[in-house]
Length: 177
Image 1 (cartoon, rainbow, N blue to C red):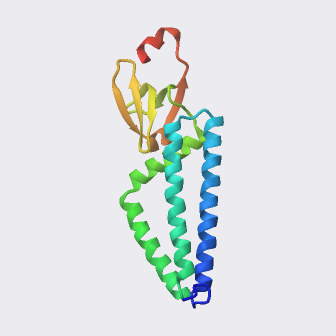
Image 2 (tube, rainbow, N blue to C red):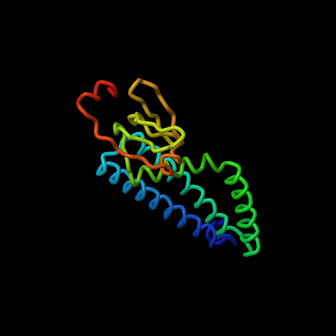
Image 3 (cartoon, rainbow, N blue to C red):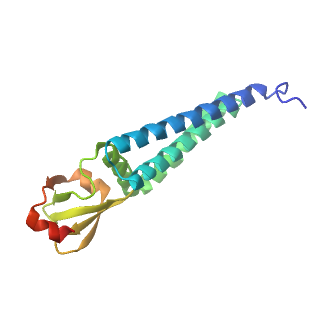
């Protein structure tokens, strides 16, 4: 059977074009992300984490576009999109705090208001914290206080609360190292 002569030849050609475009686009976005991270002196671990997020988002978009290419009627596409948005909306509402922490982690990666090694003061009236940033993960940031206490602080709260970067004094270096 001749593939290009079949009744699905347009869909097959479109699928190949979409596949090539998405692979190239994903490759280019990852290259720019790594260049940005290198120019900003961000850690390789955080860069790889953001690259995984980008890969996941690109795969989801690819699946949606492929579905649109192979859908025979526009009613099918709109029905699928409506159902998908409903399911995603319920999932987002149920997992709001997790997604807000991931989103905050991505924002912190690209805007880098503070970096690993910085000593920060979180201005929270109920629980003020002064600590050094040990690591910034997808959901939370690990902080180390002057007395060696390790605190896991949600990324979303770091963006919601007032945070000051405190210069490390020579006398304080031994507490944080």
